[in-house]
Amino acid sequence: MVQNLSDPQALPCISVVCPVYNEAANLDAFFGRLIPVLEKTRESFEIVCVNDGSSDASYAALLARQKQDMRLRLIDLSRNFGKEAALTCGLDAARGSAVIPIDADLQDPPELIEEMVHLWRQGFDVVLMLRVDRSSDGILKRKSAEWFYRLHNVLSDHAVPANVGDFRLMDRKVVDALKQFPERHRFMKGLFSWVGFRQATIPYVREVRAAGVSKFSAWKLWNLALEGITSFSTVPLRVWSYLGLMIALAAFAFGVFIVGRTLLLGIDLRGYASLVTIVLFLGGVQLIGLGVLGEYIGRLYIEVKRRPIYIVRQSDDDAS
Ligand code: UDP
Ligand code: MG
Image (cartoon, rainbow, N blue to C red):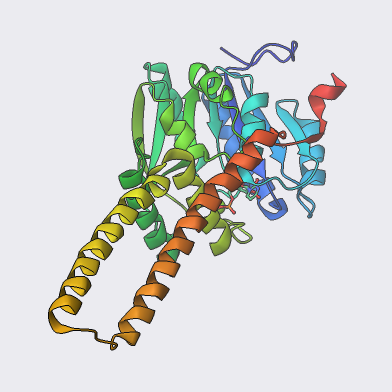
């Protein structure tokens, strides 16, 4: 199928969804590589760019490009909502039969799209892109990602494949399934894998960011990791009953021991240090338990408010 330029309403075959947050320095190079690849597939396509409240010239650059190329669709969010929300917005807007989320910083090589589309044409609903070499990420990010996947997959009923990012191809069926998720807190990698479908995997080497710095600070990554675990597992909540039971049993056994010893050997007032240690330890354990409860209750609170995931300031669909 070749692009039908005379009818802009015709549904495209491929939608590329690209969240953009302060990527002005990358956009020219990004489109310079992406568009020829898409043209080479000989499928009709649209590029849905979601400007996630950029404070640099990204939006102006996207607008200028859109004026020249109708295949670019632009959605401007009212502020920075974070990558997961921007991606959700892009998926909601995408109209293609296949949807490919991609980062604008050229860490996900657009050239691989050809092979993704090929596998999709063979009947796979999801084509996962597996990062075989993450040396473009720092050692700390690599290690923490590795630990996170391990912990997440032990705790959660549903495993997230390690080293698979948001860059992937999804059939319309998969995207429609994802759109049914009402949750406000969105851990996209988890949701992507939760829906299932027939999957193929392509290994690739993740490139270094073309320009600028990563928008994910250590603190943001930590919160994303918490999000991933709390959205897909209740083990951290339930573990406290078992831990409490174990501590209670140990305390009971210790009590029996103390009473027995007092009865046999008489009253002994020593033991101040062990008493303080036990009280402090239990206090700490209780606070951790409360903290975990807080994490979940906080999330419940946000979910029940049912606020929108993102707010669109302007989208070119408004005009048409
Ligand atoms: N991004 C976004 N909103 C944010 C942070 C990032 O839309 O709040 C976009 C960013 O412009 C890029 C993609 O998400 O296209 C990935 O971001 P980044 O490269 O900073 O993440 P990393 O590759 O370091 O995980
Ligand atoms: Mg990046």
